[in-house]
Amino acid sequence: MATTEAARPIAVATTPHRRTRWRHVLTGSVVPRVILIVSCLVFLAPFYWMVVSALKTNTELAQFPPSLIPGAWAFNNFPDAINYIPFGLYTFNSLVITVGATIGAVLSNTLVAYGFSRIQWPGRNALFYLCVATIFLPYPVILVALFDIFGRLPSFGIQGAKSWVDTFLPLIVPAFFGNPFYIFLMRQFMLGIPKELSDAAKVDGASELQTFWRVILPLTRPAVIVVLILAAVAAWNEFLLPLLYLQSNDKYPLAVGLIFFTSEHDVSYNLLMAASTLIVLPVVIIFLVAQRFFIEGITVGGVKG
Image 1 (cartoon, rainbow, N blue to C red):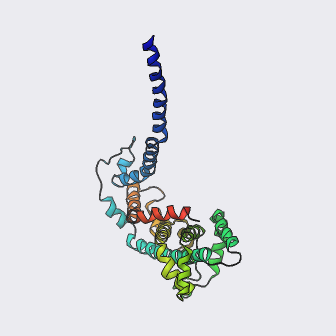
Image 2 (cartoon, rainbow, N blue to C red):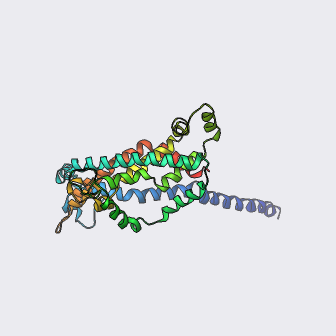
Image 3 (cartoon, rainbow, N blue to C red):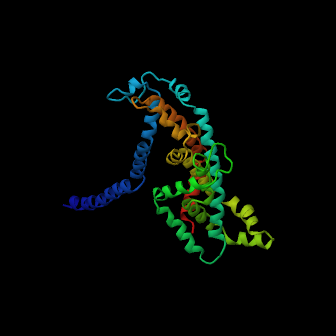
């Protein structure tokens, strides 16, 4: 009888311990890690399939069930894809558009964000909210109007062009007028910079532009890198706008040039995947190199203010 009574507290004590342990497993580090691993696999699966398909022949791609590992390892698909289209010309066009749009995005959004975060003026917050609200405006709603506007603007002497249509201008110039998301991101980051730094610069005789360039901009380097990466990737991957505004094949960027791997009766899937891999590769390299600044800029810019 004494043995039974002594054993009861032990049994009662172990039950909450087991519940706590399982609760720790479910809410601790195990389940979140499993979710992260599964999410990574889901996001990496299309990229893996693209690379694997780029190393297969068209015959092997048509087999069912498909194989997860190439059988022949057709590395010749990459030079064949480069020679199938004017890859060098399309790469140059993509670089021109990407560099121009990225410069415009960095310059315009940092300046506008500085005005919304560091300068006091009537209606500042209302105009900022209006600017951010334009994020919810579907781009196709204004696409027809923009095409009509660009079709009426003079070509400024560009050879063979009667308007902005069939030039790189509609793909570069709008970036110099800001992007609501980039403005929001930069503003939130700048709000976290102590106001005393700006005041000290003005006491030393610095103008507003000098304060921005010499004090604020160096401190916002992580956010600037985020805007730079996002703008560059968006311009590099853009498909719809170049397809709409550019009418000459020799002005197409790489993203639009992929359509030439398809024809009315056939699609060279292996060459298409090889070209797609080459196009995605610079984006992956840029992110791997700058991921520390990218994550820092997104994290800090999302919580400041």
